[in-house]
Length: 389
Image (cartoon, rainbow, N blue to C red; front, side, top):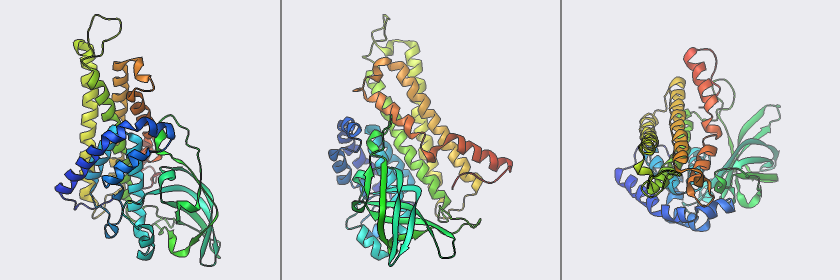
């Protein structure tokens, strides 16, 4: 995810328009994306043609530099059509933006022959054993979203030096040198293809190794001195889920004047005062939640250049993300109540939006209980933070 505040309004509107234009292709192929467990080829091509895989690519290699507000708007448009597709764009963008700067230009020139290169990543550390010229990497990295369609993987690794001290870093590996264990069998976001990446003694040259700097506590600083960027990535993945909530709202809104409430004399949901009340409540939750997310992204963008937000401020931002997500989740439940049991028919997109939203909201970066615990520790002074960033 790119982090500067310098994108022009023209660039923003152009990218949002391109995302909106790609959305019908994503929506038309959403069922195929889910059934195949990876984004449909037609959707991948639509995203590429729209230039959305260039997000997160360094500008010197043809990438598009945008601020967080722009990214939220783009991802929400994509998620409104297919949350899995939006998720893939979000993860690839964030991984490239956060880690590309840690590698020399020679490596980046190899990695980015064109700006549409896609990355996936794995955070569970594998093992790196020193060999002449680099290391041999072995391990399994689960939840690598978009692995089957990625070009490169940034894999967390641990190596032990001659002094016995472990060094934590990352290895940038072409997907052609890795295998994939198709472990992603889940209730939602099935199309993200978040499978397990496997390496067995894969050689990685030294220039494609990355070591995390040490933080104030002497341990590895996974934020690389930019903790607010981790919060930004949390907002980015939430944007894809905002799209899911907007998509669910679209489905019910389209049926509000034609769908008949069961076992009543009403001809449509719109004739029922109670149905109008439920729809109004759900609509307000979704649209106000989206507005809050945009506002949150704008505030983070203003702070990013200095990246000097305190731990309490960053935790407070995370708490706001959690609050927004709760709005989306509650709204989706209300929309399902309103539509009735037919919403769970598998060819009804409403149930897919609901499942994608509920699974995505449990992502590690969006952990409700840990976010609340972290904030409670900080505001009471009862202990050290439990979250990174």
